[in-house]
Image 1 (cartoon, rainbow, N blue to C red):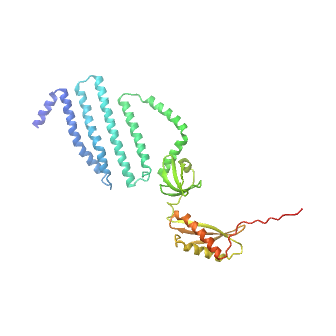
Image 2: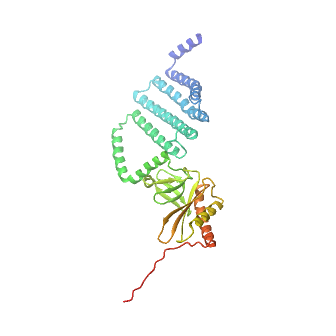
Image 3: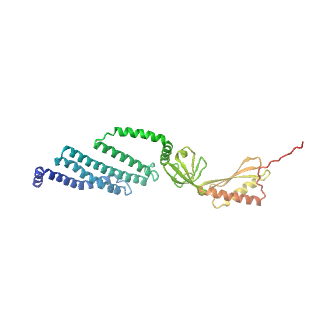
Length: 349
């Protein structure tokens, strides 16, 4: 206690510059004590997480917290130097600017760690691997905008005129880029609602069929079965019917339409089609293949042969194989596959 009293007496009677240095030294010691407290608080708040989010969060906060405590000490020490009011105001504004930068960096790093952790744990459906860049960019914009606003206030700059100008510019840009904004907004809804993901087999209402190769804010890319990559604006997709065959049943449905000539033995046709489907190595036994007599056509009796295959992408391969086999087997059984015919009668005058 005697040492502390002597130190306080010395500090109170020392030169202002020495007092300022003592305050900075105390701030340094405080910073070293605060770091373990912050680490403990982060560990407590993230105790239920099963990944390394807590360690990454502590690493992200270490330097910002350390420098923030030092800058607080600098703010306290500056008035002790006896500087002119103008110089003191400028130095304090400069230190406060540094504090804003440090705090912004800490918030930005922490937000990125938390978003990565949320995407990794998949507790929030809206935050996933596809939407993560969107949330990172939005957080960056918000944090940078808040930091700039705080700096303007620190330096006494009136931001009213700036905000009014930004609003007018925003309206003008919105009208000029309404299509782009429509695509971006639709892209945000697609990324959050997730009607499809990269690698999904989709069929769009426009007839585009293929595998989703990329989902962006402005457009979606689909690799068709002709090995062509089609880029479609998100606003167009948002207004279309989307059939996602990957997220549906794990199997794919194959349908083959076939017509036979009038007078053909229908029971023979049905048995033959069932045998052809059951003999294919990719056709599933459960559910069983089926054959339906669907219509009396103009030139044929129409049937639909239906079966399930192991994966949606096998549908086209199996359809191709079944058509070949049907033609061969029908030829062996002397079953005619008719085509439209017309009789033309010429009248003599």
